[in-house]
Image 1 (tube, rainbow, N blue to C red):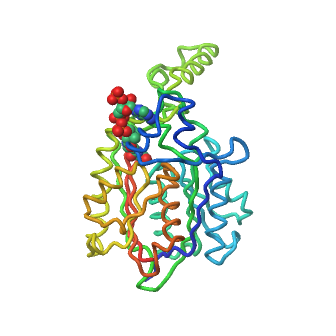
Image 2: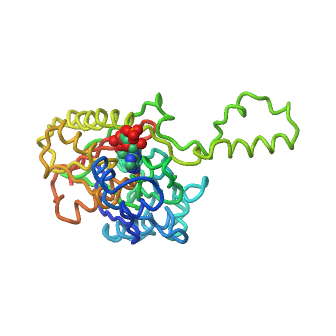
Image 3: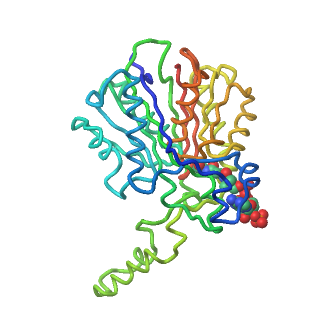
Length: 349
Ligand code: UT7
């Protein structure tokens, strides 16, 4: 039976290091609070111009493609996960296709925030297993720094996020001892608004409730302006941090256990868990719940912050590059975020 294997992996983070003390210039915060509550010491910010979610994705993809021993022209499908696209539309997939001079292949954008990469991996896995594609590029990339609220009002959100990108190339394998064993996807939209960025969006209630026929063009223009400007805070990501935290520490271990059960494995069989790097304390809760040893879990949020869709591939790549993941190892991915959506994957490396 065909399975999908990770044939190449790469990551890219911008050069610009932003420490917790750097953030103190803009908001009432402290290195002590950020490290104690999140584990983060520093994060990277992309160049304001010239460096975008797509260009970072290209950097990571270039490494992944080279390590897979192929060229960009061999890629036959692109899946790009991000919540911070270059444009509201079109998505980053086509921009990457253009930048890397790829063929006129399909390009799909995934909007699943922190679980976006694991969702993307799952979609790619299905295409490989059916034999539809042979070289799928999966990218997670984020440029958060362009749109965070750097005032004290936004401090609980802005201090955690960082920029960066990770990418993998998936190829088919018939080796029974290698490849993606299973993926597990979930959502619960009940709390969609507690971790969200509302604008730009078509959510404003007066648009929905008021028949347009009652207004002339000038009034509609004014409504549009007031809609966009109605609450400046709605132009930034909003998060009820403690509520998200409480749900994350339940759903992440749950999806790992689901994946283990589906494969007749136990937590002791995991060689490396790569949890979404949302908050070091969340990863520690997950580790505790699953009774994993320190050497079974990889975290790098301390250096890069929370890079949402990029966090899992960046951590996966760094763990592999530093020799913490070896051929034949059982690797588990788990992510949770806005939506809520959460997802897990088990991979025989
Ligand atoms: O990746 C997608 C999913 N996201 C997550 O999983 C994130 C989940 N949530 C979290 O990681 C944490 O909830 C945060 C890091 C966002 C916040 O940490 P917390 O320990 O839950 O803090 P809190 O929001 O309960 O705030 C505690 C106090 C408040 O002050 P008072 O009301 O107790 O006086 C906040 O105003 O800490 C204050 N605070 C800060 N102080 C200094 C909030 N942010 C900061 C800050 N610096 N940056």
